Image (cartoon, rainbow, N blue to C red):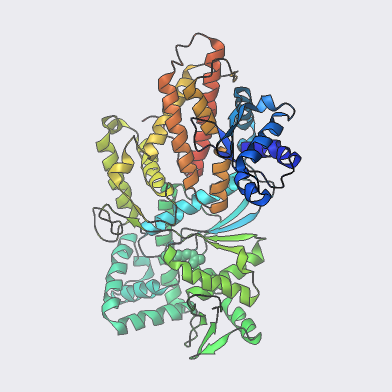
Length: 565
Ligand code: ARG
């Protein structure tokens, strides 16, 4: 990575001047002046009681004496009151780009790969998926791809909600209508769950009856199990179809129910070890610490009626996962509102001796709002089924551009995906965002279609040319070309941040900036008509690197490339 190369290069200058520090190089915040800068002299000034100017000037002189320094920098300058500014040498830029282009995964693989367990998706059987589940699927899938691209290993579980109250409600409704497991259809489930859920909200005793069915099912009631299996199969297939549309996949298709086989054994074990505390007949794990600003409620491991809960299944699932895999870190992708739940779960795991707290990371996300500022709803109404959302986006898209009327279904689906995913992933995931279909369907602005349009535009040039032996050269480097090159070189920094913070937005920002510079470059240079082959090949090499990077980064954002737009 370029920043590390530069830091390693200039570090001896500080040491030789007698300053002890880990020097750091950053991208320039005044690109019109330089490409990179180093601000260490400000901190050193306090330690060595010298002015930043004295320090920076001394270091500049020492940097200039470094062997072969001209290969890296065209200019090394002191700037008031204590900055060191660097302008890269064009030959060095080209060599970096060439190396990046040819290295596996652009040289982004980490030296110390880890194995991550990712829990994302989290749909609930028999309930329609909502936009919150969409976010979990998209962010989780993207982070998985980023981690793998960085050379890590991942194991992913969809973690279905397949054993909750909604199952008891649906079974109650089916039995009430005298329907057998063989009568269940998807259409039936789509109407039955909302109907039963509404009734249970009104009628406490009905809710109790449904809760009892759920508990009996968990305890192995044969009749209920027959219903449950069919409900899971039908609803599960529908969920799989949606994930296929989104190109989201999982290694494990497990759920809350998968954890039940461990629960009685774990309950006995932890009870014997004295780790469970009795509270009103329930068995709980106190998790709060003196340092907590607000007391954290205990995790309820087993209710007084013997039922296990969401928290107990999560603990047992972690126990199972660690039994089956060697895992370094667990990542959970849900709505931020589940943050408290996961904190209870993670602390419980530490208390029970399953895994230490620092193995877990909660990757929460905010709410998707509509243009009215309230949680997003489709035209069709309240709890939007995702199919309706995809359809609505497709309609807006086709209305927005005439040429798309004749596009293939496949290309339209790719574009719909790009709209939804780029709108989502470009945000810091912890923030709420407004999903404005009109805005995110446009071919201009920070949108998926804009990125894809730019990619296709650049790729078209390559298709018309002989690209078998392109080579970068530094004859007549012009401004727009140089700016694009400098932008491309920030890949490493952005990728690493996305990976460390589990934040795909860094990659969105990066490719959006690359596209802006690439379009300016395209518009300012007559690439096709260029007579000088050396110049032309250099430009084509640049386009080749750009498209190669864009394509890989789009893949990390779970966005495919359409054949035409
Ligand atoms: N089914 C849950 C929901 O709809 C999400 C599951 C998240 N994963 C987990 N291991 N608890 O909110």
